[in-house]
Image (tube, rainbow, N blue to C red; front, side, top):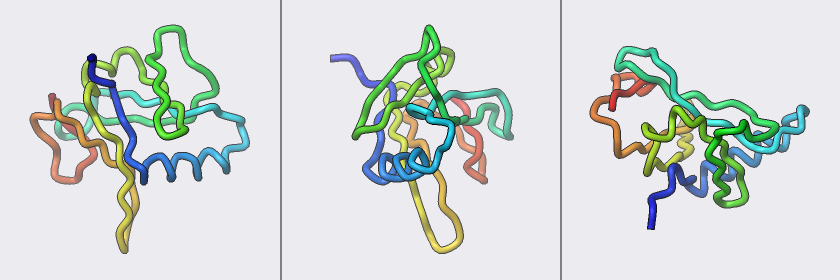
Length: 111
């Protein structure tokens, strides 16, 4: 059985559904990718998506549609997306088994 590119924690799925319910652009899901940048070399990106692009990997998990940029698949394989909230902040967190290094602020990573 092949490993799913990305899975969502219950908290991440709930938060994405909340965000999507307030989207007035009628998006159908979220698109996740990576870009060069940050002190460790790469950063995660997430945006609304109205439809799949031709080469997107499309995953449905816990009632949420996630479109994965094809260039990011190799970096995200086996990742769990979580949502953490504490007294001072809230954010999506990527628990990525491919990371070899993460910057101190948690905004970028290296594989």
